[in-house]
Image 1: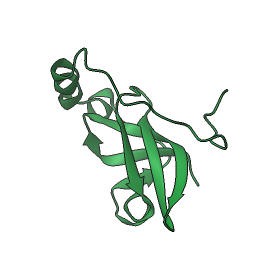
Image 2: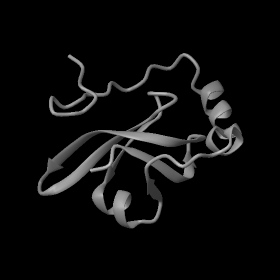
Image 3: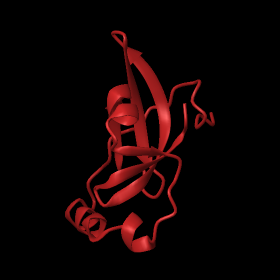
Length: 99
């Protein structure tokens, strides 16, 4: 599975993500995606959403700064300043497990 993805729409103001975990839950595959710029911006998605929805592009698309980091991100950070983030648990077989 490709590890680097670009969202066709911003997610909390950002568009470039890395797939850090792939898990199977009751026969369904789930993916944990984390923003390359801010690990506080992360989401869990499924195979159908990632591959077939048209919302994601495999790899990173070269975008201007204005397209890849929008004002929505600055607004999100100002509203959530000082709030803790959810812990991200990396599977042992993840490319990003460095322990």
